Image 1: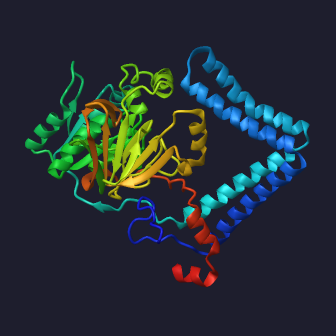
Image 2: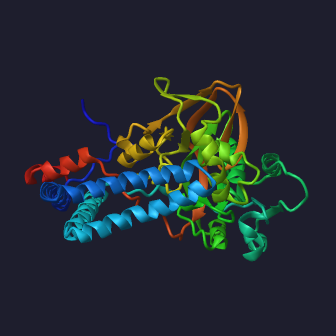
Length: 454
C-alpha cells in the first residue's frame, strides 16, 4: 500500500524533493541517532546505576507534571518544585558518577540528529505560500472596528481615522450592549459595500467573514485583537495593525477555506472537551492561564463534563477524548493545542487533534507525539461530535458556545476571498514534522534516482 502524503504539507502535484543535500542530511540524522543509542547502551552496560537514575528522574518529572496539572494548593506547589529538581538532581548524580560526558554526548547527538532531520524534511517541502492575484482596489469598503479589542489598538493606532482617509466607511462597536455584527455587515452589503473588514478579535472576524463569503466579497483582516491568530497565518504584521490598511490601496487577494460548525463559520478552530469547558468560565477572558490551572484538576482528575464520541469522515470513531480540536486546515507539526501556525489555509481539509489523558501514564505517553495512543492527529473533511447529553460546550474561535448534539464540523474549500497588503512580513516556513518514512526514503535514495526525481 502506497503511503499518502499529507495534503497540508504536499498539495496535489507536489512531490517531496530528494536531492544530494536531502540525502546526506537524512543519513546524518540516522547516524546521530545510532550514535546516541550506542552511548546509552555502553553507559548502561558499564554503569547501570547512572542509567537507572536517568530513567527514574524522567519518570519522577512526568509524574510531577501530572500532579501539577491535576491538583491544587500545596500539592501543586510541591509538584512544581519536584519537576524542577528532578533533572537537576539527575545531572548532579551523573557528574558524581563520572558519566556527565555521556549525558552531554547523548544530548548533542540527539540535537544534531533532530536538526539534520528537520533540515532534510524542510528542504523536501514545496513552497507554502498561498497563491495570490492582483485585483482592483475596493470602491466602497466597509470596516467594523472594536475599540476595546487588543487593549485599545483601534485608538492607539488611529485605525478608524486612517481607514476613513483611504475611503472606507467605519462602524465603531463602542456603544453599550452587544451588537449583531453579522447583521451590521449584511446591512452594509445592502447599501453597496464591495469589501468587508474587521479590526477586532477572531470571533468577530469569523462572523463577518461568513457574511463576506455568503456574498462573494473580499474580506480584510486588521490585526487589532489580542492574539490575532488569523492575521498571523496570513502573514500580516501583528505589531503594526495600521499596516494592514495598505490592502485597501495596494493589495492582493488570496482564496482561502472556511470551517463550518452547525451552520456557523469559524476561521481558526472549534474546541471540545476540557478546553471548551475552560473557555465557558466567565473568568477565562481576563485570566486565561489562571483559569485553566484552576479548572483543570476537576476536568482531569474527576472527569467532569460530557462523554464525547467523535466520528471522523463517517468511519473512524474516537471514544471519550479528554480534549478535541477541529481546525480550519491543519496546524503545523507538533502543535497539538492550536497555539502555532497553519502552513496553508487552502488545502480543503480540517485538522483534527484528539487528546485522551486521564492518568500520569497516559500523560507520559504523549511524549511519543503522534505515535502516542493518547494522541491522534488526523486530516478530515467532516467531523461529527456526539455526547451523552443534549448540549455540549464548544469554544469557537475563542468564543464560548453551547451547541446541540450531534455537532457537525465541515470545511468549505475556497469559500473566502481575503485581501491583504502586497508588502507584508509573510508566513515563515513551518517547522517540519519528523516523518520517519520520508526520512528513510531520502536516506536510501541512490544518486541516479534522486537526479531523476528532481
